[in-house]
Image 1 (cartoon, rainbow, N blue to C red):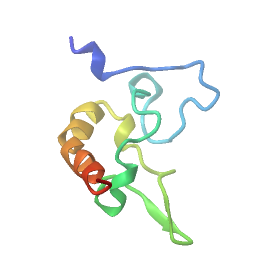
Image 2 (cartoon, rainbow, N blue to C red):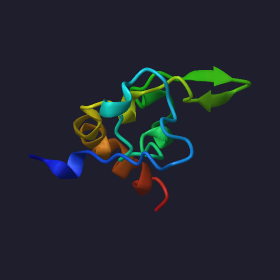
Image 3 (cartoon, rainbow, N blue to C red):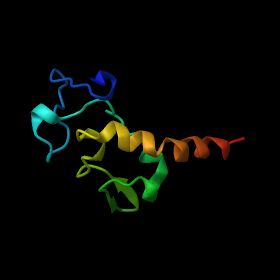
Length: 85
């Protein structure tokens, strides 16, 4: 089993922090979504409120396949870092 791809923290005061994923399948590994920095290219289900990205309705980093999805976009996140050089 690839145990490093999944973590759950039922003791968190916000668990589950998003609706739409059954509690037994809720993945807390990406508590803070590393794809947020990709803005409109993150691939998640977000909306814009008053010009600010609102990810309240997004379950992308908390689903069963979230690890593979995030890793598939990691090069885009790394590329963002090169813009600060």
